[in-house]
Length: 338
Image 1 (cartoon, rainbow, N blue to C red):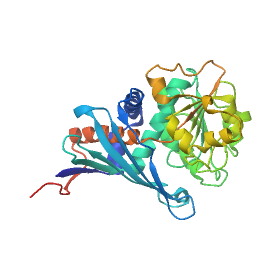
Image 2 (image 1 turned 30 degrees about the vertical axis):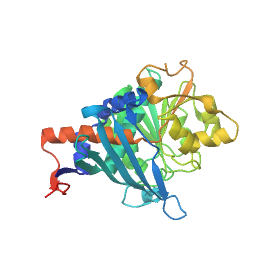
Image 3 (image 1 turned 60 degrees about the horizontal axis):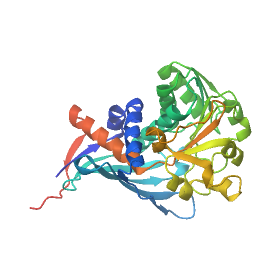
Image 4 (image 1 turned 180 degrees about the vertical axis):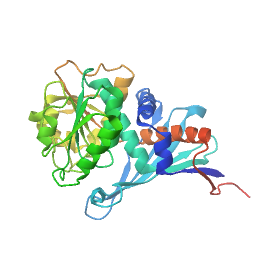
């Protein structure tokens, strides 16, 4: 049995953010139609700290066109201070006819690209059409793909960037800003506070490893759209309760938000919001079942927790592209009777 192994370089070459946005639209449309199997992820904590091991299986589509697979990954938030990514693992793609393992790919690169693409999809559906400025809170692996995704769906002219170490010489925020200027040809400013980065932004993306709020509701202008991405634990959040309370709140999936999202669960426990505050899932926006923002002045929040359908759909696309272009390493793993 031949399996195609795809490295991070292969993933980046075969899955541009702009094209991944359309792949994600298809995956969320399938989810909204009930044409996907998506159990909640299984998470095993490693010791008493924030580190975890997670398994995320999914089936997207039906019949011979279905995509079957899973992501198996470690999540070590402290890796932000090391040479290693905070998310390390593999995504697996199986044949739905015989159960063959078709492909094995680097999960860190797929996660970064598909996460940004989902934020891009949500921004396309929720942000004001004339939004032209973006604030990125955080300067890790998700930051540059998010800038690319925002530019793919809105006429972004300028960006502001903040991270906890932004003021330090040679900080990652400074490196990111220079890379963005060169790659995207936009005005980019590194800010010494999250508030100063957010105050003038039409779109805000929070992509930090913080467990406490880095974004406050009273900083947001009318009509701002927020992609809340970094926090994925019931006890962790990047948005304060005021930001959630004043916004029309949307999510990748209701079940995931109500089980895993401190951004929503903490304000819920405080009585600031109730479950009706969660207006719709992303798939309902994609299919037109929900109209999205109610007015130009409304603040909208999209909460992204990351779903296995995203990883499986992304790898199916990558695998097809790899076969077309001859990328990847074919190996024999077994799985056939002698």
